[in-house]
Image (cartoon, rainbow, N blue to C red):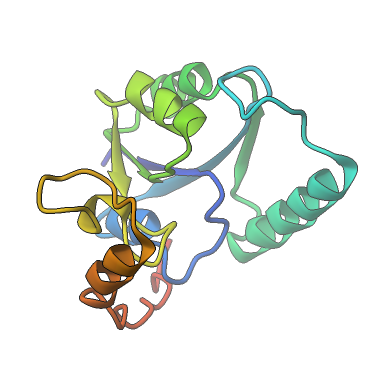
Length: 161
């Protein structure tokens, strides 16, 4: 059976990871992390402290995955497509991000990747005005947000990856 690819982004954990859980539902999983300094960004390069944190987080994730984390560098949309072709993946799962530069990367892969929630307490699309626009008044936002609380209990990590 062809594998499913899990594109780890900032959600570098096994437990409470909807994308990973969905990919593990049936079949082999290939975990992938792409270090992308070429794609759309927030306008600044990653600093030394951020690189240190990322290095150790990826090291811990790789150990939790028994050394199977595939690490690549390059423009995320290109690297993900290359990885899919290389392993013959039939599905790609990733956690949705909400910054404008992340949305650009997601749009470039919309035909290929299934994006899952997991980055926020409540996904922004659920906390909007009656007309579907973001709130401008905090009190109204808070009132709408509390209608979605408390959040669901965290999901355990998959039994088998």
